Image 1: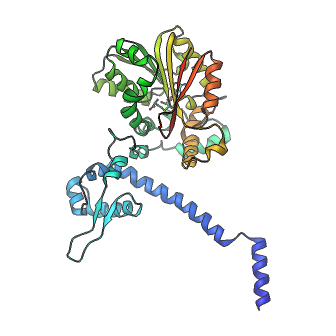
Image 2: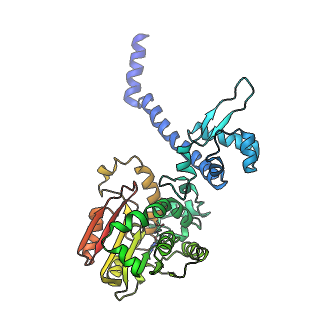
Length: 374
Ligand SMILES: C[S@@+](CC[C@H](N)C(=O)[O-])C[C@H]1O[C@@H](n2cnc3c(N)ncnc32)[C@H](O)[C@@H]1O
């Protein structure tokens, strides 16, 4: 019997993988499924204003949360318990004296889930997009055709989600921290400069600068109609008269030296023809102009990038959005989320005739910045 068992075990290990390793692998996979479900709950919490209602309100019973929000108690209880299970809400159990269970969005949680206008750590906006109905089918088809989805084909809420995801750094750091670090740019903006935001998306960066520097004139360029609708609405709401949006890609910038300051935020890696856009930027810039590039923090080397604990998420963004956009025309460059690394950036920028290339690290966890001049 003992010999039979030993033989069976030996046979098992030769023919099939270690069950403990299979269990650990399956646990990791179910962790991603849990992430998908928690992501949906975060989407609901953000969309329904639950995090904003809970911020600063202390530990709430479900009845108190229902009164504050007007939502149904049974649904709130299930959502809150799920959020507590995910570690996103603090939990106090009901006590023997009859006090009901309580849920709290702590001050730390509020920085990440509620304080969109003031916190660099705000993240809930990243969960806001609802993909176009045929989005996943078209993504699957792209593996056969090689042709991805442009920004607008990815769905109308893509520009909104992008802005909410990238917005905190634009709101909190662009004017007070980043502009002053660029040689001569602040003074030119105060005096009155011609500025272009290439790949301006929903226009937050452009409107933020236009409000801060009323003597300057700002031009936003983007081929996405969805993004420009949001951008125009934002500029109109803010009453800005020094802003103009152009439904055009960076390839179609003016061919003569027009701009004193150009910037491209998180978009060169999304473009089908980034080299063409970089050449167009070079032609459109005044001789003493500055180009600020913000693009995803990446070493350019997959092995080194594996130190990034969020690398798998970055590849998910790439396949579903950035690389897809960059492959949305035949012959697209397809750089993707991690593709515009410092070595690639420097090579492409110098190839277009720029002489000055300077890396700035503002400790933005997601992005690096490059100051470029002719
Ligand atoms: C990740 S979003 C960034 C938007 C914005 N700069 C921001 O920081 O929120 C990338 C943008 O690049 C735009 N884009 C794609 N191809 C482009 C091109 N050829 N010229 C200009 N913009 C382009 C997309 O439409 C999209 O709005």
